[in-house]
Image 1: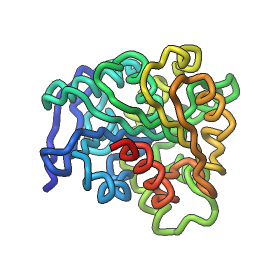
Image 2: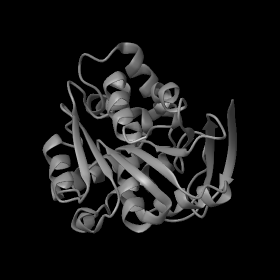
Image 3: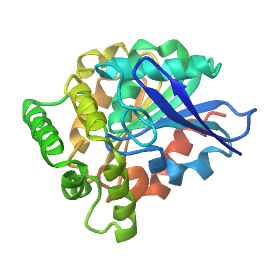
Amino acid sequence: MTTSMMIDTASATLAVQIEGDVNHPWIILSGSLASDLSMWNSQIDMLTRQRRVLRYDPAGHGQSSLPKRRLTLEAMADDVVELMDRLDIATAEFVGLSMGGMVGLGLALDHSARFRRVVCACARAVFPPPALSTWDQRRRDAERSGMANLVEGTLERWFTPDASAAMKEAAAEMIRRTSVAGYTACVDALKGLDFQRRLHECQMPVHFIAGELDLAAPMAEIAAAAAITPNSQFTTIPAAAHLANVEAADAFNEVLANFLYAKQ
């Protein structure tokens, strides 16, 4: 059974979807900038066999409201904890990709008592200066010409040339549905990313996942973050770009299952 609801947090009224047996332990999924909770569709059948799944749209994305405050990655991590409190979720596992992976690092560092494991997929832990200037340009493009203007460039980063046309079109629809205000607010949050200097503090199991052909979050940078994170694992998804969970769903799901279920 699927349950959909809207939950108020300090940042926004967030659209939430819950699936899976009520007796299973919780897992929370958080996605990319300019996506919505449908980006996890290929993971739901596998995860709900042993987990109760909560996925949500970030502020200004999908069905969620526009942001009510200035967003930071720390604030977005607080929102996840607020969702848990509202739903009486004591502890959970967390899987985040891209922006969601950055939120996951914030949760691992600042809310470790609430999480058993974190998966950080296709996400940097810090942005070098050239990447920050790229975000400024994308922000200006969105404000000047709308989200449709960002579709082509975003798809080029999200997928390899071999990805199917249907896959790309579904992703394009997610981008178009994202509000400009939500996109720019999240871009401003991403520009404050600075978790790499704190990764040595991490006290919980973290699995870093990289797409072999991901130019948005290069494999070498993710491997470097994993190398300084205690009790971490690192896996590369072959022949995948940024949305590895979509383009290489079977391989991605196998990595998740091995990490989440191996010790049960």
